[in-house]
Length: 64
Image 1 (cartoon, helix red, strand yellow):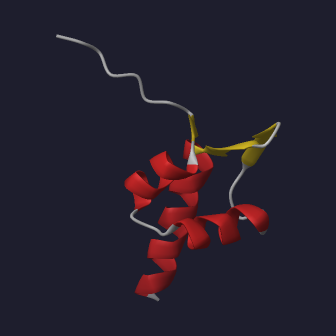
Image 2 (cartoon, rainbow, N blue to C red; image 1 turned 60 degrees about the horizontal axis):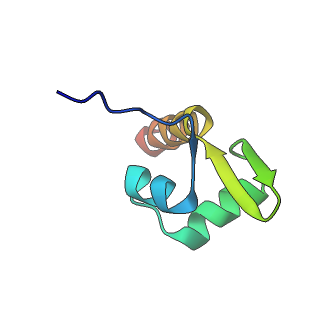
Image 3 (cartoon, helix red, strand yellow; image 1 turned 60 degrees about the vertical axis):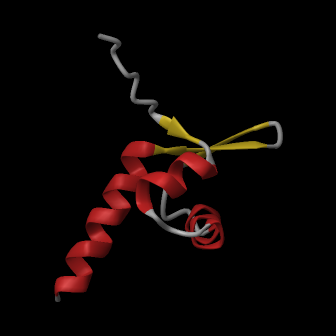
């Protein structure tokens, strides 16, 4: 049995699969600073923890 590694930093494609959000929506929340991201050259990596926290806040706001 193989152990799956859960990356802490996601590509846009990984973040899309995780959240079912579109690339434009992810780009907007990354650019606004709502989620933590890192730029390595031209590559962008999105913090999984920050993205999950953002989604939790959005879900709580939807309940209000």
